[in-house]
Image (cartoon, rainbow, N blue to C red; front, side, top):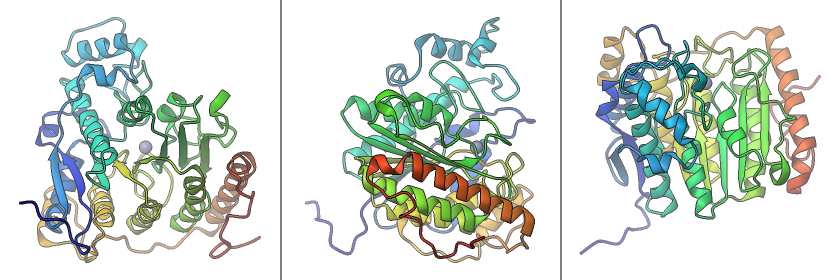
Length: 399
Ligand SMILES: [Zn+2]
């Protein structure tokens, strides 16, 4: 007989992974290293976070074509399959395939379908109420468009899932804290009020894809449902978390979606080679805590992160937040060894403090304050929120 859960048991949560990911490779010179996923599992496993009460570790299963068609055009998926099989094609560049960012590598279709399948399984479990949170570390490929690969992303798993939620009449909030603007998801749902997209990212003035300004607020019935908080190079934990707190919890409370989908890229980290923000692992973890505090049925996805030393620590820390467990800062021996095998010597999950550059920091504060003020002016009134009223004053240096 099944035992009813007691008050003391944490609600079940699910972590998705596949050993199959190791079969695929963007190429030795490409910044996207698929090995970061297995390394994350090693670090989380070393902390004992992948077992225990309520924790379900589930395999990724490939999404069938008909699921991917909810967001992607059939002609594009056909081109992806040809590229994946190594068939030469004069038209591949037309779909964004074969450029430096989006190389054609063997099995890229299978890889994309597999990680999108994990996102769909995660979403369905959460939607059915079987788990409160599901985390697919391989997901969050937020740049892919319906008929175009972009920014290392071939299949936009978040958009495929959101499209499926919409088909079942759900209202969805999508929050993206990757260093890059979540353009593929934003523009995929730009004209509907049934998806609220919020992206905090390094400004398009200095970083790919060059979009994500506060004035991009949506179109038609979707006007007011695309929210962008661009941030300047040098934005650190305090500035990032201030902007996140000012914008995300009030909008999520006001919108009250059925489901929350988040993209948790860690290319915001101060050592990331592709972007110029200055977050630490502990700052990122705090951001995940704020998202958890919004207390919604939650599908968490991975995303960018191009320093192999950061990804496993960040996503193990994120998963610890999702489990509700406290973990020691000192990395367990097995985690240290796994990192060492990759040439990474680290003792702790968190990062040491670094002296700030006062001028850069002042500029980053100014930029963040302007972005948040623009969002409060352009977006907040539509949700019945006072422009400026929701910003906590604490921790904000004035002048
Ligand atoms: Zn990114």
